[in-house]
Image 1: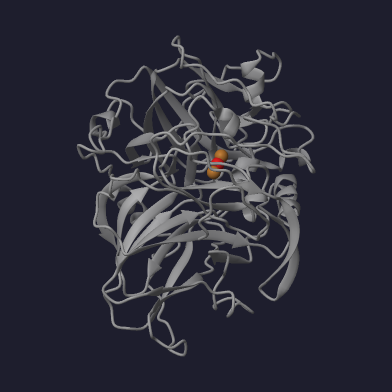
Image 2 (image 1 turned 90 degrees about the horizontal axis):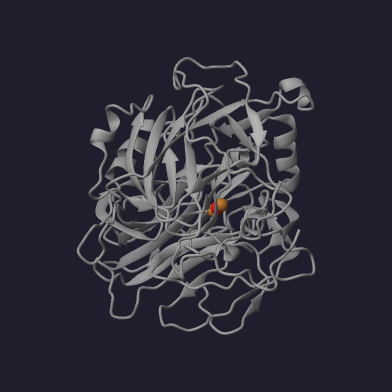
Length: 528
Ligand code: C2O
């Protein structure tokens, strides 16, 4: 990864890392966005090269958050916009990506925020760090695929390859030379900063012969635990320690989808190489064991092992009481609108509302009290309770469309239960909330039971993160304190589902204090 400070301009394919050291200073990075030709899997194609933001808590400053039509209008060809933000209190691995349609297929990168000088990691200092970014590659133009996906209501073609640091690895055609390799020295310890930037795939990842110790997710320290494989959803990051303690050799690192649905499974394996220093390239690497693509038990077990570090220096401040209880059902369904291919188009909804993108950015509308852009009437629970995870419900349940937001009082504590449903099919959904981290206080299979399940919530050391998987046919409960005023998007981080409407936004009201309201918008904010 490149380290750079001062004014820097670049054009590149795929990822570019930003490393932020904690000395208070203004760092400037310039991203130029261009179309360039790239060759992968025996084909050349033009792709959009490099912009966006994600995962950083933009305190009172949604203007630098990035999702198109939520906090800003898109940056038009030939114009520019400066994302001006402070890094306050956060450190760890995050990432940035384009946030419109499927543009992040090629426009994404790492953000690494170093701890403050004198604040060491809460684990032994590694000898070296490496960023590992997962992505996907299509032969076809991704904007065409998304149009097709939204129009036909069918999943567009699966990607043609998964990638590790932009490279698919030798199991794909013409990809021998497109293989990422990391050299290690025997006896040393490495910190891998792993990011899943894939569009539609949750991924398992493992390294042949080597265990990993998970120490951080979504830029928050966890209680360390050792595992053979990790599971990481689009939007998430995971830091692991790896000790080079095996026989000198070459070992494959590999990623493959977790997809426990009854539709064709995407089981392509992307590989990269962990190579001990001095070992010749002629040695054939061995492949790691990865959980099966539909290994739900592994996924649940893994989720349960994730806990906040919750040490005196890094406490978990879990809200103990709840001011506002929310319950949202996640549904896939058929569109009932008359122009939607006679009700055959697929759509996705929260509480049976499929989100409609506005034509003016919501943050602007909220900040300047524009009416007619959105309604702040998103329901706190579904219109009619039903047996959410019972036999597949293929009936049209009258899903409605709307730009409806939920208004949250400043500083209130919110509990949100996300319930997967069997409308058409159950499926695992990685949900991402902008503007906040949240605590994952509980998760389970089947229907959430408000009378029983809260008694088992972990209110001591639940994992704190910004993207969480809602299990297939199950539920996840999160808590957060709404102390960041603004308009904050929440969406499934599988782009296909986001495109179908599996998203909504919260309006968190200003607080009464002098530093508790949304900052004024920057002068160069793109307008629609
Ligand atoms: Cu990774 Cu809405 O973003």
